[in-house]
Image (cartoon, rainbow, N blue to C red; front, side, top):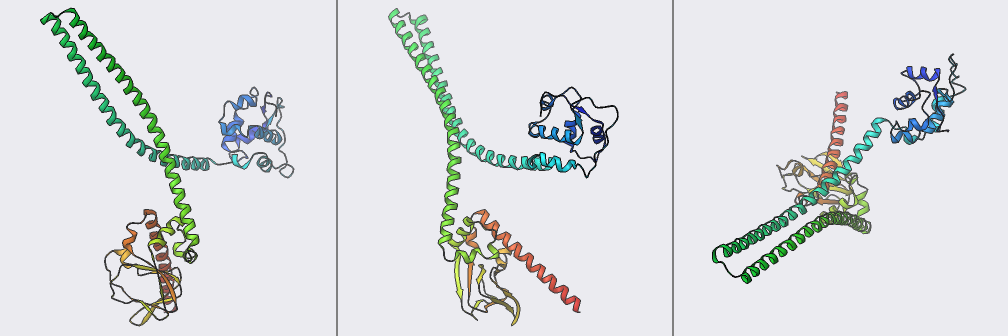
Length: 381
């Protein structure tokens, strides 16, 4: 494409601009409007954004092929519209322009907002560290200022003493010279201290910046080491694979699951063995790892528990009644994961959030199943 060539809008291009349902996007229409017979590609490039410059040459190749522009003065009579079967402008343009430049304004804005949110999170973390170090810097600066004021008072006192000796006691010239030398030395000391204080201030500002950068790197490295240790621990734990396959822990990361494995208790029960009795007092809840259990009340089976399903979570969700509301009996040999809510209080917030999300998903499934059962009963009544 010749950057020095001037282009003209053809009658077909003018018709495209007047058609609100044409082939071109709003951004492409703005570029086409810049074609006036005097501007070349280089001139138009200076009037548009950097993103639009990336595909400007390909766009003008498309305009030439589509007959929307011409590198010579257009004839007075309009050209016939090309047959859609012979030339498909949309497919030709999409072949010339990469997909990455066909983003909509909403997609561009969403990407920019996502990048902005990440930058704001990093800026907040850096600002907290900077505020702490700034407070230390303020205290040191206040100490330097107090010392500076004390030195100024001391110099002023010596000056007053010299003037008093000159006017009141009329001491000898030797004494006067001696006092002036002392005053000069004090001033030199003060100036040196002031220079040192300014140098320390500059060094402290540099140290603050370096400290913030180091703390950020240390935090990232610590997080990486934690995740690596969690991966290694869980891969070597013989019970990890059983827990990882459960629906209850579907959205747990390895680090969150490793924390759970550390303080949760692994329990095993034989067939027909009772796990909970109605009226018992307890706060722990359980997640079925393997086997089947039944929940019954007044010798009537209410539901069957399968791997991945929790039970006994009433106190954890309500924080009111610690008494068990039904019997839970093992139908087969089973393995359970016992979780004490007291341990959850010391867990990471994200781990508590994952458990809360898991209960929400389970409760939603239970409500959906109960609703379907109720509809089935009503339909047969």
